[in-house]
Amino acid sequence: MKTALTATILLTLLACSNKSEKTEAAKDTIQVVRGSGPDGKLQSLSYEQRQGKHLYGKYCTVCHGTEGKGDGFNAFNLDPKPRDFTDARYMNALSDERLLETIGQGGRGVNKSVLMPSWGERLTNIERTYVAAFIRHFGKGNE
Image 1: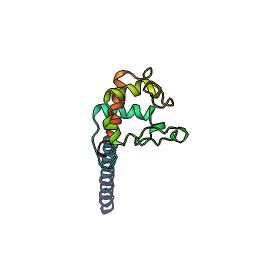
Image 2 (image 1 turned 90 degrees about the vertical axis):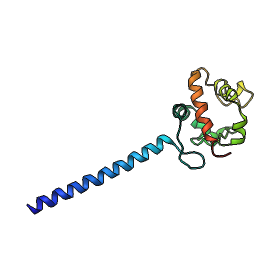
Image 3 (image 1 turned 60 degrees about the vertical axis):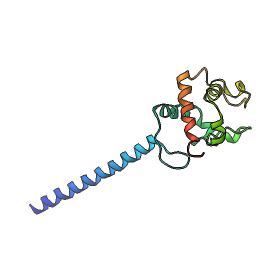
């Protein structure tokens, strides 16, 4: 009887320890969803930024990098190098219209690098707005 009681207590303790591990995993997931800013501080992303993050990851990361520093794995092959979106001074001086125009028309369309493709045929207006919103978050905290 004591052995059965001891086994039950041990199983209960193990189940409780698993529960706390799941809670920790959930906290990690929340942090991934919220993202972290260039300064390493945890910050919340708006709905638009979260949508833009997905699109940015699919279309922009290869050149601009996951953190927007212009250091994506394809950046090595490019001259000029892709824009560093963490440069708050430059990004704050850039109007939203100009950013959307650049995403839609590509570098050639705005007299920048011809190596940047135009995404106007691939992304809808709202998707380009989402990407621009996500790109804007890179410069926050570097001001």
